[in-house]
Length: 474
Image (cartoon, rainbow, N blue to C red; front, side):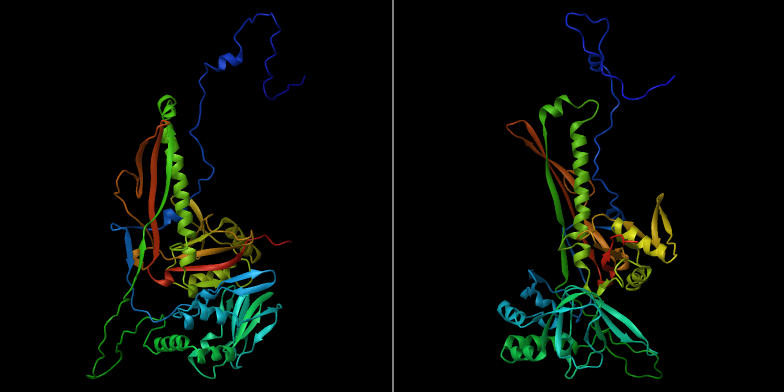
């Protein structure tokens, strides 16, 4: 005997003129009580970044980060435009080179950009040799370049990596007859743009503005400063007797950066007929509001990562950005990322990047541990938890970034900014304000959340860039 299982067979059709002897299931379902869930939403993530950041109350709507006066001018990334095989410099981005930071004339920068020559470089090709005179400025439009030096005992070692937007050779403006301190060798196929110093000098000779910008840059480097570029504090130590002690003071930045709270908003609309008639057993407005707030919180975390004004990826200083050694994230890469700051408290990475790191650990026979946070087992490296964050982009499906932070205002770290106690507050920093009912009987609510983020000192935030997450072929 066989027993068949499966969906219940459809009720047979009633023959014309034949009366029913019992109630049909279709009619009975109208009187049945179903057990139902609240509305679900697939787009809800763990949002570890919102949970991990310490939030600072910003009562005035603006948060000012006061720092010591700093003379160091950061090295930014230059942008390029590509048309077919031709690569052109976006002229205003040449200000990311410290020596050109104060050049206001866009036409002058455009003329300078036009003097660069494009060059294609093959993997393993040497661009410059250590000890040779610096005769050209190099801009890396695409590809990865290694800086190779010599160790203490004569061994060859990689002392740094350069990638898209980086530049080198412009430091020669600080001294005459400057020599390359390292060999520059292409790790991958690369596109570079070069400018001979003679072409640059010819433009300097006929441009008073460019000469003044160089003079101001050189004056900055003659100021007494520590290894971080901050104005030096004169001290005496290890002395005997009664020597004259140095006098000093701590100077501050005259124009500190200020962060205004950003906002994510939407207008929730619910028809009054729905609110009046369909509220049992679940309140329709509450359910609509719950899912709307979830979407706003997801957007808030996305902005904290990707916003060009205050997002973590955009606001990491360029000397706090490093490249992977070989492509995928390795234990060596994360060790270097951790070594760039004291007391790294959190690492954030796309789930694909975490999986790629796990593959590299398995390849080396290394097991990376975990930490328990409120019952959640979070993967960790060197005791620092690695939180999944799907808001970190995966570019082209191949590369992503890994963010490391030191969190907390007390620790000169990264903090989240919000304001609580706002009118009609529904959750901390989020309010729901009734906007009225229009002539079509549609009820409107304005839902807003106010937030931002700030890194109190540059080394509070670091990024490992160009992390390959694609699974390699076996």
